[in-house]
Image (cartoon, rainbow, N blue to C red; front, side, top):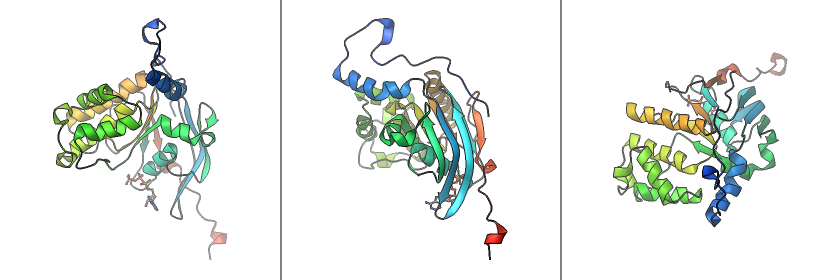
Length: 254
Ligand SMILES: Nc1ncnc2c1ncn2[C@@H]1O[C@H](COP(=O)(O)OP(=O)(O)OP(=O)(O)O)[C@@H](O)[C@H]1O
């Protein structure tokens, strides 16, 4: 598996421009929460196994991502790509193995891991009666983003002109773009994206590739499960179906 090395690092929060400035309370909070997460983050899984229901899905799966790295999960339907993303996000306990951030098991500080992750699943969580801006603003406030961050994220995904539109009026692709705006507003170092390009038009797929590239250039990491081609230069590839669970011993089956 290829590994991608950091080329450019995100400047420490509150220290832009190289001159010391007094930090606001909010900047201090961001620094305390995010700075230890964003710096030199390497994400690793060793010997991972997964069971859904009572059925083993994959076993003995290893991966490693350096800061700025991208990992594309491939495999046929049902091979376990979404399950692996959920394990990585801490939403599903691994049946075996360990996950580590900078060599520290994520189980040692699961709350910290939740803060460093942004997980984008198949479903676009959205409150239908809230406007686009309210939907994003409500969620972004939970992650410490301010109104400027919300506006910037909406503009980046081309939804600024729909900021006052109720969520229930959005098309499928527009809902997906709103979910991408949530990824941007979160400022989490580790993005876990499940089929992020589904429903997006060609221009939006290009925007998706650009924002992932910018995230990586700042030292962020991304894991993407996808059946569609995405332009992710130097991304490593992990075929989840290369890690099948052991077959039951015929001696044990009767
Ligand atoms: N909640 C669940 N309970 C039981 N089994 C589940 C559950 N969710 C998924 N599975 C099973 O786990 C296996 C892996 O599913 P998963 O969704 O991870 O695959 P996938 O590779 O992401 O598939 P796709 O390409 O269709 O999205 C499948 O056999 C599926 O039936």
